[in-house]
Amino acid sequence: QVQLVESGGGLVQAGGSLRLSCAANGRTFSYIAVGWFRQAPGKEREFAAAISASGGATYYADSVRGRFTISRNNAQNTVYLQMGSLKPEDTAVYYCAAGPVLDVRDYYTPGKYNYWGQGTQVTVSS
Image (cartoon, rainbow, N blue to C red):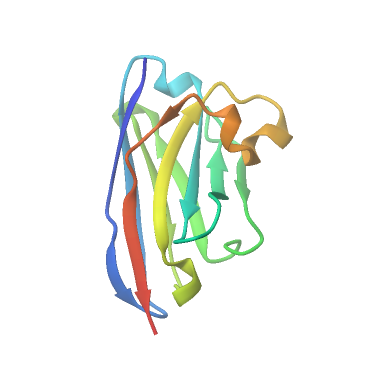
């Protein structure tokens, strides 16, 4: 069992930066992939970024590539999402998810992740 807790959300002006953290307990965390998903009001949850268990592979949605960076520190059981050049359309609740994802296509799919955090709100003002 893995429990995830997100932090770092808040209100920021367009063009600004935020760093989200996803802290996990459970000894298996370093063996599983982690993804960040986001959900804006009235919209479906969408993929933002993901990282493999070792941290050697990262994946990004086209909408955030070049602006967001995902990283992980397995010794501290934490995954980060550094967000820069933020836009109002980045406003959403951001969720951290973890699971034994192996196939590249599955990193983008919410249903492939077994564990989810409670979410953290990110609001970007124009």
